Image 1 (cartoon, helix red, strand yellow):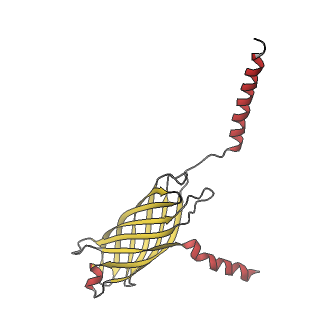
Image 2 (cartoon, rainbow, N blue to C red; image 1 turned 90 degrees about the horizontal axis):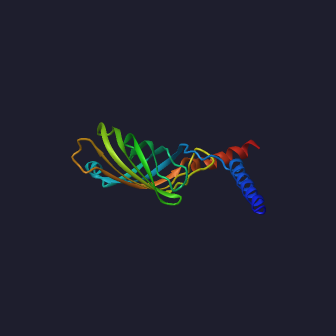
Image 3 (cartoon, one colour; image 1 turned 90 degrees about the vertical axis):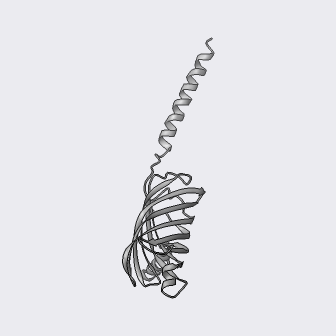
Length: 192
C-alpha cells in the first residue's frame, strides 16, 4: 500500500503543472470585429440600362464592411456594410445594409448582403433595394482587425417603384490595401 501514495502525488503534481503551463502559454481568443475595404469593378445588365439605349455598362465603386462574432475561419459572422458606387459614371449610389459570412471553404467564405440604396443622377433620384454576394479569399486575421478580401461579386439592384426587373451586376473586388501597396512602396523608396 505504501508504494501507491507517491504515484498519486506525482499525478497530482503533473496535473497541476500541466494546468499552470496551459494558463501561462495560451492566449485568450476574442471575437474582435474584422473590417475590410475594397474596390469593386464589373459589368451591369438590366432594364434601366436598356431604357437608356444600351444593354450593359460599367459598374464600379468602393465597398466596406465590418463582420462581428468570428473567432476562426470556420465561424459564421454578421455585420453592416456600406457602398458608394456608380453605374456607367452617370449616377451615384449610396447603399448600406447587413451581411452574413458563411464559411463555405477555409479561407474562401461566401458573404451574402442585403440592404437599401439611394440613387442620384441621370434620370432622377430615388430609393432602391439590393442583394449582393461575395465569394473569394477572405481569411480571418488572428493578429489584427483588418482582413484582406479579394474575389468575385454578384449583385441585383432594383429601384423602388421601378417597372423593370432591376439590374444584375457581376464583377470583382480587389482589396484597397493591395491597391495602395505600390504607392506605399514608392513613398518608402523615395524617403531613403
